[in-house]
Length: 102
Image (cartoon, rainbow, N blue to C red; front, side, top):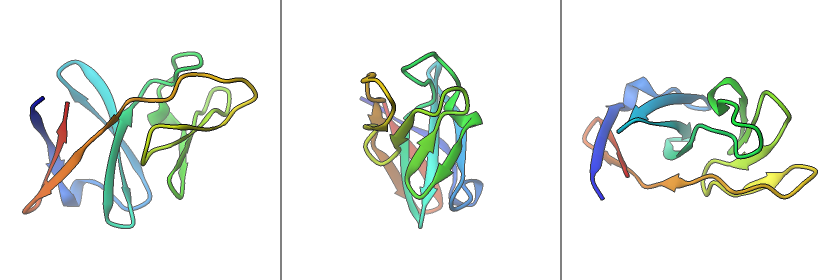
């Protein structure tokens, strides 16, 4: 596992999600009240980019069909059928830099 720099603290606005690409993988980084979390950007239901969805609290809602995932854990929180959880990644803040371990 390696840690990859994805930006500065100032790049990630509180309450917003931002897509970054790490080693060819699209990942969402979210700033929730000063805590940073990272999960896969691809919805496990139909492959939509979750960065085009919305964030409310720690819940990301897919813009295509409304699947809801907790970006702190990657776990599915609401959808009419059971689908796979998202991969969740460790986020490290050092000085003003944000790293994601992949």
